[in-house]
Image (cartoon, rainbow, N blue to C red; front, side, top):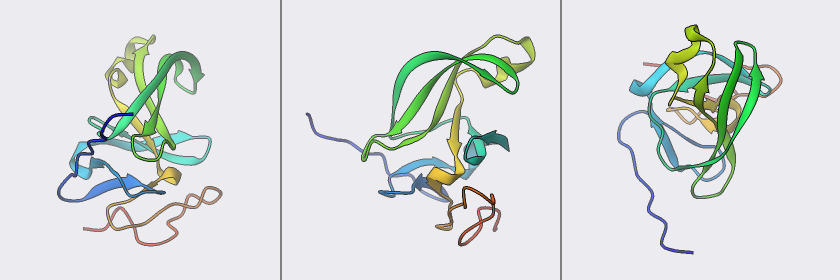
Length: 128
């Protein structure tokens, strides 16, 4: 395996729950209204330090999508997915965007989320 290059972001960042590798900045959040099997999920315009898995078709609440799971480049943890294709016209805005599952990442103030209650375990990502 070659040398691993990791991008360090500046400002308020979301990072890997397990190894603290940076993924995204708060300014790249498009929506905090998404859900996944572990609770809340956020839609981001840009995400770094992830590898993209195989594309697959999934039926989601909003219809059929082609998505690819995304994994932390440092520790390999599954942290969300990337929308490749949205088949419903009203969902096209998701194409090329990323979902980070809140249970699997730390917020900008070091806070995580409880999988069962969707409540902050420590800190809050809504703080100013």
